[in-house]
Image 1 (cartoon, helix red, strand yellow):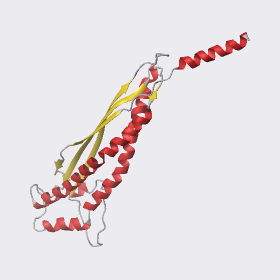
Image 2 (cartoon, helix red, strand yellow):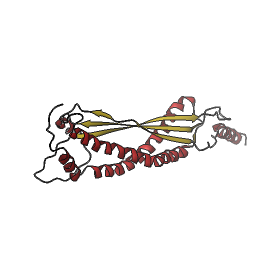
Image 3 (cartoon, helix red, strand yellow):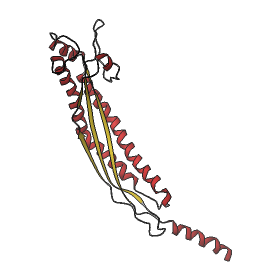
Image 4 (cartoon, one colour):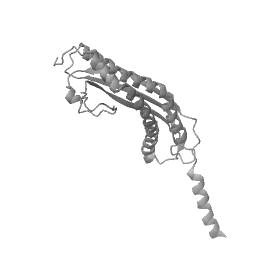
Length: 226
């Protein structure tokens, strides 16, 4: 019996010393879409712009040749500010880790390129710029529309993390980074879904009929360097 007690007591002690982290309240998640006014560039030729990756496509007749007069490159950069709750477990004294607050600022910074063959202030420049501004406005409308969807995706991910621990102090940073990675992955997955909608809306703008319309508007203006 004495030997049996020797085996039982240490096991009970280990169980009690493990500790359990209390379930945290749901984290608060805020998301903001920051629209930076587009930067305009007129320093690259149509040939150089044609070397950029252009996602939209359109069907054209066999004898038609279209050159790139303008394009827009959009940069979406989310910045994360995550606040953590790190109370000490009452049994072990080790920290319990959970997400307390999440603030995400999505910075949208578009750059509009107009071919250098189009004289700044001229008809071709203005009509091309107007076309590219439509792309920018479509981006802004789309992401503002789906901002609540993005926020909810991060909220769901944050809710699912719960409390981790008790943790040995040397493992705290590693677990913190893993939590941030989960939040980022949730946002990126939802952005990929919205990107398909964004592409379809942008494709509606880039059509053969639109490019023919733009060409007809400035038929009398000669091409040439600024």
